[in-house]
Picture (cartoon, rainbow, N blue to C red):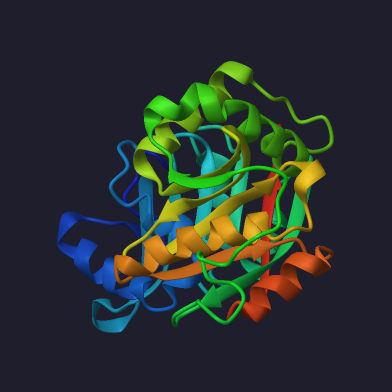
Length: 290
């Protein structure tokens, strides 16, 4: 009997594994409201991933879902879609599921179809900025009062050793929650890969890295910002904002738009991003399974 990894369709379902002939139609569908699922569009060229889509009358694409070879499930549809398909899809998957990332209602919809509840989940607010982001006071050229000489640079893979302590501190504070396992080796390897494939800027005071900002997903028309972090002793001085402004300048120089997600209780960050021109577009959620 074929598994969901081998089957191209489920009986009675409009969902199908995407053949090459429909790939451009799916990309066109995903470009609309791409800010909702940049994590998906950034993976369209990934080897080993499984892209499924629902096609209506005349072949029009009405939804998509992607399951990465690393156990990340990324939905791009408006609930409620066909529950029967998703139950079968989730039950018959070959790869282990570790994470679901997407708009809040979509992630919760999928969680309810999985027998095991997530071991951890985090809600966010998704913010977007479609226009220029250099309001007064937030330009990369703004002078800051800091205890040392400030330099801001774009990071490269050869900066892995220099920046890893800063990245590790960010991961432990913001990403690995409720005793989720943290692998130093895997984290470092992934960070080096991010320095190669993403846009990463960092600020140093007298040569010591003190803040960073990066893209964490690069889509077709949108880049997703993530990993904005400042060492605790220098927070509240505008350093993180300064680096984020430099990053956003680089993103917009490539004629792309920017989105990001923030914890709903992070009032200072939400206020700051709104002042920079970002708009709140709704709930976003990441759920985890061990």
